[in-house]
Length: 150
Image 1 (cartoon, helix red, strand yellow):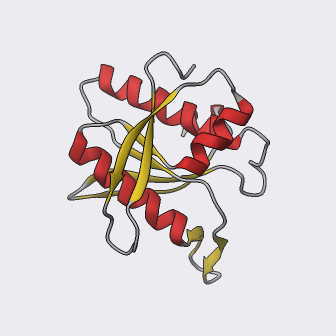
Image 2 (cartoon, one colour):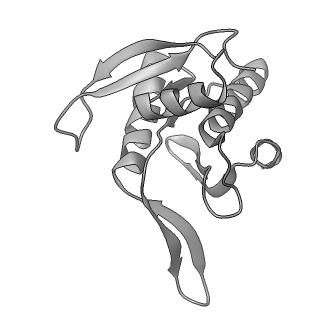
């Protein structure tokens, strides 16, 4: 929570189950929107991966950029702000793929391009495409280059 707040990224949900601890985070939502949303999200994921790795924990993140449905769902008794859409599903697939590759972070081309607008000195490399359930075309992925995120 502290890291998300420091990078001005909204922590929407934390799930603990047989897959481990998973968090749904979002930049660009009301109250958290800025021109450098993608860069802050990449930086947050990199910082969390570094800190958790130093503690002996493994982390894998999938990060996408695009339009999605964002709204409160539920009733007066229990409601949450949630996200739905293809980019949300793609991020989840990328997270799982990152875990299978032992990678701390995979991002899509839209996130890479938006991050480079905010930080032209950032460096990313292709992590290659992969076939993802629910997608007709392979998802192209990229990863920050060590030293390319600060």
